[in-house]
Length: 519
Ligand SMILES: Nc1nc2c(ncn2[C@@H]2O[C@H](COP(=O)(O)OP(=O)(O)OP(=O)(O)O)[C@@H](O)[C@H]2O)c(=O)[nH]1
Ligand SMILES: [Mg+2]
Image (cartoon, rainbow, N blue to C red):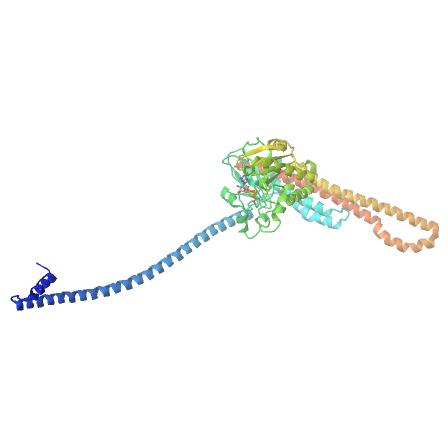
């Protein structure tokens, strides 16, 4: 059947013809067709209206959905942000918990029952101080006090770590990020614990690294009382400058050092007696909390060492005036004869430099050290990461140096005792010198008195008595007696300190022996 519009068209065509029959019928059919069309049109208009309002509603819904979506997206972003904040807070809390656990164990760790160590502390901190305040003969008293504090520090170290007694301490020092820790790590066997390394100042607490004959690593964090707590590798790995800042105080005050016993490699030979001491960079600044702390720590640690390995970054090109002045200051303070302090220079990170430049830096460093009369046993160019020595060095090779150090006879007790004897020997000399001077003056005064009597008779002698009385106050026999009493006190302190040192260390060795046998 033809569609409404086809039919309409057909009817209109027929009507248009002049001689068409049944025009009325056609017109009526056409009218009918038109009304159908009109109806369709009306329906369409109605449907269009309905669709338009639906479209309108849909648009409104879409706009509202869009705004809901935007709100949801914003909510999601804020939740994500919150989540990240919470994760960070969680990590911080975990770190805080870890820190608190470490502080708690350091503070609660029981001090070994070592009465002799306490006695030594009292002798140095109280009795010696009293003696020093009264005594005025020794000119360089500050140095004597400093030396005795060093003795106390050393005894605490050995009491806390009797294993150190037969070890030769080799301090590994230098500027921050020179690669000191990486250098020691290159001497640790595979599977042993690693010291923290990094590009920002890392090492904050000195670490004593000793060879362990077992495969297991033992890490002990020491408190100031010579007591220690065992810490695990992950806690140890975190003990860097940034982590230390989080304590809000110098952790070194309650944890002055850490000791590791770990399997060592035989890269440069097997050295059973060596204990490498990783030090903070002397120029690391205020990283651990207070300015100069690292320099002081580095100094304290190096002072008590028997040898020094100076590590520098070869790409710095030269040793630098601050490095030289640090070395000079150290040599002037160390206990042994400056010329006999074995020093070895490691030009580290040599993998970063062409061989021709390495030789030039090596010569420059040697020349600089010669200029300031610092003698070193040898200089080598080394890569701690590649564990490789580059070109021929100057003087001894590193392996020869370590082998020589390994043979040094250690006698920590004897060494400490000698240091005490040296301090009190100086006091004794100074007091004897004062006694000699006083006695000489008294004799001179007496001779003047006699001459006054002989020349001017009783009258002159009487007139001078007032002056003599004043002079005699200072030059009286009682002053000599006083000095002699100080000599007795000097000897007593020396003997008591030596006895306490020996007993404190013996007690520590026995305690360690029993605790090892209990394990
Ligand atoms: N290429 C190369 N990089 C090295 C070498 N030795 C150390 N490094 C890198 O130098 C950076 C510093 O090394 P550390 O061992 O942390 O230096 P450090 O002297 O102990 O530093 P502080 O403890 O901060 O004073 C680290 O990123 C090491 O990976 C080396 O021989 N070659
Ligand atoms: Mg380090």
